[in-house]
Length: 458
Image 1: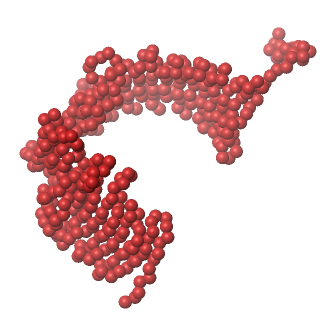
Image 2: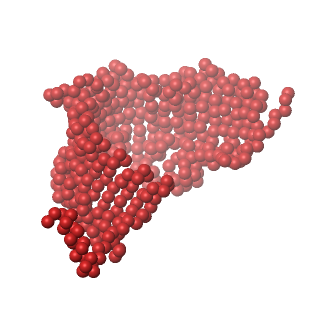
Image 3: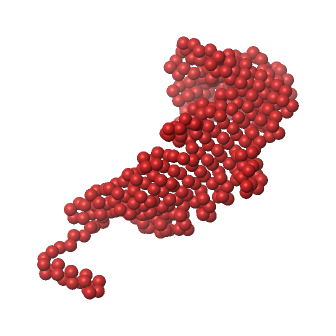
């Protein structure tokens, strides 16, 4: 008997027998802003859910999940906005189970994943758009990551090796991450515990040559930095190098003895700056005393910043003298005010200073905070103060609070602004280079009325 004849016969038999056929009906649960349905379920008259669908705002189906006994069960499908299959998988009583496949819009496979009882198992793989291998991951039957995971560039060159999940295995050797450039040359090497860097690390200068098809030179590159890390923090002993192999900086740390030395070198490996820190454990915060320097942009011998540390890893204290490479340009103002941090911004001529201090009396915040910031013109421009402003700390951090002023190189006041808790409040004045008042207004905070005062003509 043909299929359509059988269906007709069955329907006729059901009619004479007085039976009824229950059909699931669609119920729309949510709509997009344009009125098109977004979420719907198909439900039998007794309330049993057959499936759930999601839709894009143009009416194209986004996904379909079959249900059994109130749980996702059966083949799951997701489509792109163009109607192409994007993902196919399977649920078993509400849990991901078996093979899940992800597709690109060109219908080629992007990734294959495997699940058991909703956790990953087996070997996962992925591919780039050009179908070059993109990654591989490995899991045991309990969903725990195992083995060496790998990633590849889209040109087929290995991009990463990673087995930092070793802490979950009975293996005493540390895990590691190796990352490579598109020419196969190594870029980074880290020892790790779990997802955190811990142990030896190395960074290398990137090269842009042709990949080595033999792979013999892939782990050979000019080193840029090497040292030790602890819980993702890289402040333990390390050395940085120039591209020609000469030193830039060395940090020699003996943390448990409370000593740390930082040295900077010129192109001939001669020491040009040195910082020596003394660290002692106390009943309160860790006490660290010393001055550290920061090099200028595009230079490893010119120093554009220095910071004083007292009782904290954050700036706090007073600098009595400045050893910036450009100090001769600022002879008129160096040492005039308590300063914790001095720096010259790349592309700027001003010298900036900040003063940080602890709360007095001590507060629950613990660390010091910025109190005053100033800037100065170099001696070639008169050597006078360029700006001065005051800060106040609250639970959200430091905010401008008090008078903020800026001056022309001649020393004539450019403007005088008043801040309260980070907002401009009160009388605000601006002047031209001759000292003539050009703007006078009264402000009452952000998004509040501003009163402009008319200035009388001379």
